[in-house]
Image 1 (spheres, rainbow, N blue to C red):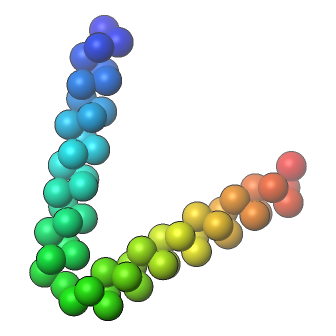
Image 2 (cartoon, rainbow, N blue to C red; image 1 turned 45 degrees about the vertical axis):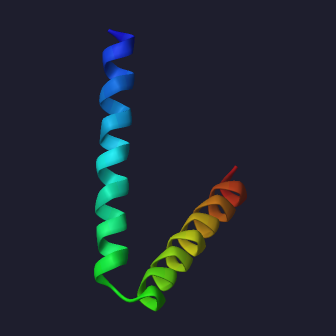
Length: 54
């Protein structure tokens, strides 16, 4: 059922968000920012490399 899948997905996203928020609170702000930057850089590289491949 489509609605059930959407519901599960959104609750998974909420759980993931909570986990990330907990990590950010337990770590220093600097660590959190480094983590965000790292993620953004990784995503950018993935996009660039996929563009180069196509």
